[in-house]
Every structure is written in structure tokens, then in C-alpha cells.
Image 1: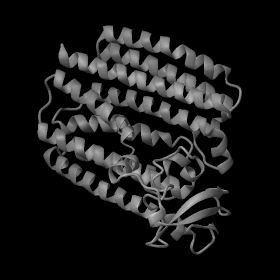
Image 2: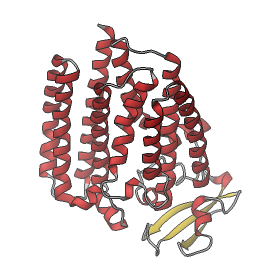
Image 3: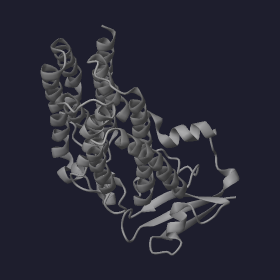
Image 4: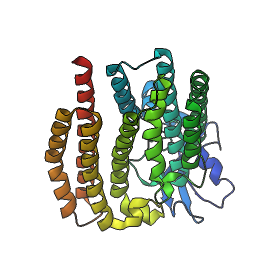
Length: 355
């Protein structure tokens, strides 16, 4: 039998309930959060016995907790860099390439799990019903368990990183920068990049040039500008999705006191920023193809993106309110643009591998 309990942040038991460490036989499922991310925050929990928690299979919990679909954010740039070096016949060490791939996947999982933990603690995932994996909010796992999983995945990633540094000492500099940026961005309780204006730059660096350059060096291949610009282009595209998601959540995140670039710009300016951001991606992608990839593919890529982008830009221009179904519809349209762009990129890579 379940019961409701409301606690304020000043309560001595608040953190234990939020982390899920208050009991071994019950879960505290948050059902309402008021004044999130402030000293006056209050949370109403539904206290449910473990046996009454509705849980899918263990595999499904693992897949949802790890948000397997989000791994596309690292798999695509890795595939592009791997394709580039395979086609150029510069791939020098298959074993270190495999270790680097495993290390990147575990590092990404660690950061993603930590992100879910932080968003639960900060209140983001308790306010936005479609945010995060929902593993904590559904009572499948406690916040403390998710945090522990993040640490375990990080340890594996660091072991992979150390073995790669032994093989290629030049990687030490890249790893050091990635570690500094990662700690600043995600592993400080009060300073996550998601709660700072302009902090999205950390995501750009980690999922962009640091990822692609580091991965190429781990293959035993010398640094070149091609891999750097692949990373910059990918990082720019990832930030488009992040800005788009923040735009959808603009009003509730402002009300909750969360801060990011979209919130700082406000509705009208962030609407224009999204259109400009996507337009610049098309320009940068065209320039990348002109200087580093196939010109024919560049022309086709650019034309296809321009055609499919028209409706999205027009709908953004016509949008008059930050609330309502039209905002969510625009988010889906923007996400389709993102998926269309990476689909073309993957097809292009497969073309180079097959010709």
C-alpha cells in the first residue's frame, strides 16, 4: 500500500528520499515538485513498496536507463572518422581502435547516467515528464544506484584511456583536455553546463573535435584538419538538437529558474537563433565538402538540406507563442532534419566504402 509524503529541501530527510537511500524495501517516487532548484523547493513523494513497482524486464530497464538511442551522438562521428581512415588506408592499429570505441561508449554512458542523476537532483526530470530515461522517476532504480553505475562506467572508460595513452602518448593531451572539460561540465554538483548560459560549449567540445581528433589518434593516425572539422561540424549539429529541446521547454524551465542560452535569449531571439543555427550548419557542411570531401556529394547534400529545411524555417517564423502543440510539432520537425542530415552523412560514408 502506498502513501504520500511531502518534504522541503530544508528537511533532514529530503536528500535521502531524493536519492532513494531512505529504505531498502520502498521507493520514493516523486509526483509533484514545487519551486525546483531553489531553497524553498518542496517535493511530494509516493512511497511505494518495491514489490508494487511496475517494472519491465531487466533488459528493457537497462536499455531505457542507458538511453541506447542516444548513442547515435557518438556512433555517427566515430563511424565517419573510421570510414575516412579506412578509405584513406591510414588505419594503423585495429586493437587500439576497438579499445577506443569501447572507451568512448562507456564514457558516454557514464556521462549520460550522471546527467540523469543530476537532472533528477536539480528537478529537471521531475518537472519535464518526457525528460531523461525515467528510470529514477518510475522507481526502477534509485538516484544513488544510477550515480554508482555512472562511476562504474567511468572507471572502465578511464582504464581504456590509460591503455591508449600507453600505446600513443600523444593522446595524453587530448585526454587531459577532455577530462578537464568533462569535470567542469558534468561532475560538479552546482556547475553543470546545462545550468549556465553558454555552457553548451562543453558539449560541443566533448562530442565534437575532442572526440573525433582523439579517436583518430587512437587509431595510430596522425592529426589532420579533416578529423578536426568533422568534429566541429558534428558538434554544431548536436548543439542544434540541444537548443531545439531547450526551446520546447523554454517556458517551464524559465519558471523553474533553470538557465541556458535559449532561456537567456528569450522566445523571439531564440526562435531566430535556431533558424540561423541550422542555416549555418548547411553552409559549414557545404564548405567541409568543398575542402575535404566529395564536391558532388557536397552539392547533393546541400541541395537536399535546403529543400527539406524550407518548411521548418517557415514554421519557426510563423510561431507566435512558446506554448502549445505547434512548439512540440516544430521540435519533431527539427529532429527529423537532424536525422535526415545524419542519414545522408552515413549513406555518403557507405558510398565511399563501397566504390
